[in-house]
Length: 344
Image (cartoon, rainbow, N blue to C red; front, side):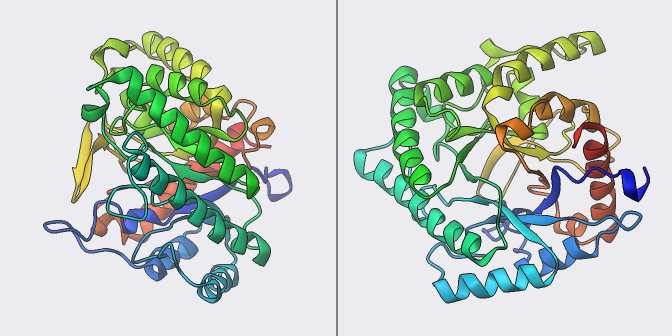
């Protein structure tokens, strides 16, 4: 595609949290610094096209949630000086951080909402700086399916109530919350559970869904919810297409944030992170997904839902893979193809 004909939206972002998630705990690989992740992002180049921005994890040691105003501004200056924008922010909603379980006690749920409030403070500082003009705040249930199955109806009701309270805080700060669809999160571990939770939360336009190609592939297979499986091993292309349409038709209206990724049909955990849909390199020969085609299902009407960027998620990639320049050029090339096919 000629430079003159290139589409400019959605903007292409790289996630910074692969340097943190599943890293730094006993037995796991060490963290990669934010500076290193920025360097890898800035250096990626495909025929003169580069990443437009980054998405951030508000978590030690990258960005402590109580980072001072001045330090947030210094962070914004650093990112802007590299020619990058900041998009979505991940709020630290989990036990052991400032947050806690969205289906726990009143005190735990209040901590969850506090984590969102603190994330909104940083979001506002970044917006005032001018480095952040789009994106959402990402959340999840901060608890696992095992606990949810103790009392599914009551658990979903509690999570929805917590999400509504957090949504009120977000809306007051001009923010939207995107709940990450992932098989390791309580009440969000299947596509049907996720739809039910969003419907009970009942804040369309404020509390929505973050779709990730790797995670939602496991939705199809019913990994943690066999009763909601749409496919069985050995499926045909026609069966996959029908199942993918069923899932995306249900979740796309709620989708306000989107991660490009690849999955090989397996689950993976690292360090303290539970097993979930494995993120694979964009060119993994065992990848189950046609990245460009599958992205199109989620990106239909994306601009109308306020999506202005998409992000690559390489969560729990080994550090050796992250530190290879060719990893990022291959990823960027895949994302450019998605934008050329489905952007505007």
